[in-house]
Length: 412
Image (cartoon, rainbow, N blue to C red; front, side, top):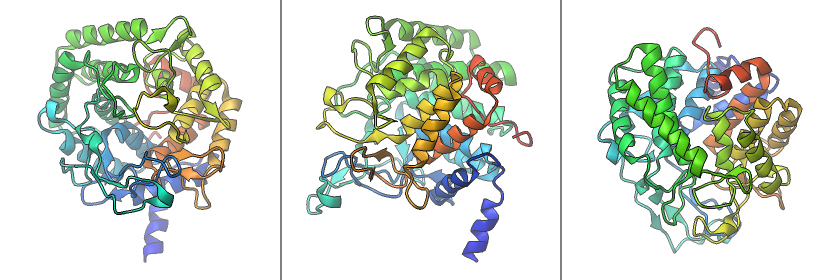
């Protein structure tokens, strides 16, 4: 009976591309990570599997991250799993309802907010990795980018014909009102650093996304709101990022204002439509990432020796970021390079076509919690990007949309 259920569910996948087998395995993984009563999808079903052998980068990922929202919805819709996409959207709206100032970056699968982090010193940890942590203190962090992810997810839902309920727009307007007075604030950023708050470039870019998607939704769907004010804020954020987030001396965007380091989150700048892929600043940033953040052909998040996260240095290459690089290369018309990189990533899967968050380029072992939802979402989305005509990818970029966004139902 169980086998029959999974065969029936898998048979609903509409993807017929070159990498259908791997895409389907990733979708099965996402389904297995879903808590059916609420539709919540955990980042991973494990805790404290180390990102560095015998190291301290050991986190509890048994929660749902708002940051994964757009990637999740897009992956499900691209494959034809509308019911799962609706359930995820409903979980998201329940989680973020309430005061925007109280919005967290992660919640339990039931939507519970209290997620205290505790260390368990009596446990030795996986192969000596310590401390073992239960819960995740990142739930108490301030991260600007998640406001953009929520807005982008609901924008994608509308564009795909998956109309959110009427109260969704009220929630979105409240989020924008909060963001309008807080987008200039420093935060902990996409990588949830445990050091001081900074003016992270990616966070500002995603704040831009929030207002950009609000303007587009209001204009395309006749939704009410102070569109001109949103447009002014969007333009102000864009100007600040281009002025303070770009370092002319190294000809690259930087992870936070005032540094000369590099960060793979900058790969999302063209993927969210902040700047066109063909622009000089985007091209030079991608070239810098390829020169300075690639190990064994895959991408590091950042150089941990920089001390930005105030943890001991050392971790593996970051698999989702490497998928983002493949997207950027495809967007730039470098399709052969993108496909080669994608195939290299697929070779890092285990014997069941499952992947973790990171990979050790020396031992060729998977690192971190396993299986990692964000990695599998990225695999599905990149497979779709690489299956599209170049013209369609370029049109998405020109519209300021993510490449390979889900088409309206019945047109995918």
